[in-house]
Image (cartoon, rainbow, N blue to C red; front, top):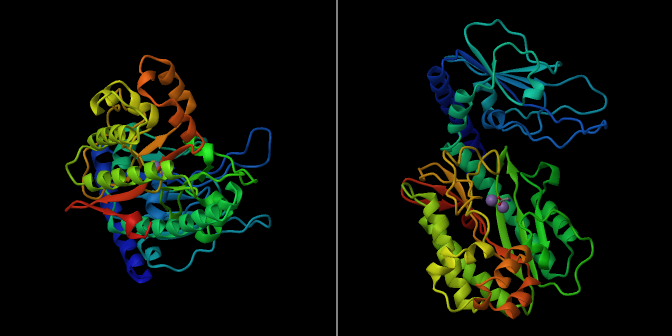
Length: 430
Ligand code: GLY
Ligand code: MN
Ligand code: MN
């Protein structure tokens, strides 16, 4: 899509949000809404702040990550008013906003004050944002019913949002290719992270989440957070889970690469990849996302048996007796948008056998989800199984051998369309 088309879509996106917000305000009995972008709190006892990305509803309208102390006013029948905090400051620079068509769809003002703008108050005002930054602003702060209704406006993405998510995928796919090449050339986790940042032209602080870069057994820690500066003597596997933000929108992609000569592990990666494709193909309107999660467990059971990791138990028993959960402990995925784990995936608690599933709704066109099956060798989950009554069904030697490869996760970003789905990650060449 051309830059011009994308920017035109953004204007339509703002009009759509105006309609959705007007409806939510009317249903909840408010006449206007003030949204705070928020700001980064200082670390305790320090003059340094945490990294800041921005409050979801503010990003939904503006895409402006990193804009602290800014405010957006929404009123029925009127253009939104956006106050961007731009102080006179010789310590920091202010954001230089390139001229873009969406500025015509909002009333843009610049403010030197951090506090909410003072405005003539008419009717019922709601104010949403991090309570730490709302101060004494008049109006009702973070009313629950309205917040829920506004979160719901983020569930079905507009064409602009889907275009941004597609671009976030294209950018991240280039980073994943560079990461894989660096791993295969003998690089360390630290080197792989640098290669990813270089290829994506994105500093890590601006990424949607801390990149997960696990070589060898580190790949078995689901959100492994360190970067070894030394490369291992033997590079057996790489798991990289990393994304990019584009105009506020996040990609969330995982790839696993076996090291040279890791035939058994490579076969498992291939098996999981085939399963992942089948799961992505299930994405369509009307499908219960929990059914995709359950299908994953059936697929993992078949993979474990085919690999000889387990024997003497059929697939159903492997699922029912919790064996597959020890190898695949997380959920199959979540909503994706201006937050990597986008909001309101769970309108009711997830089933007891899927406690970490963040999305349990029936899929609708416009939703964007991740599909991320995994198969890991995690000692704290496998030891109790090996030492228990089911232990005789597991091949301990094979598990011990594969433990050094940590685990596998393969994650794509998929749009639910009227006709079925679009896999943004594969479309981007990932
Ligand atoms: N990157 C975190 C996740 O996949 O949910
Ligand atoms: Mn994810
Ligand atoms: Mn991920």
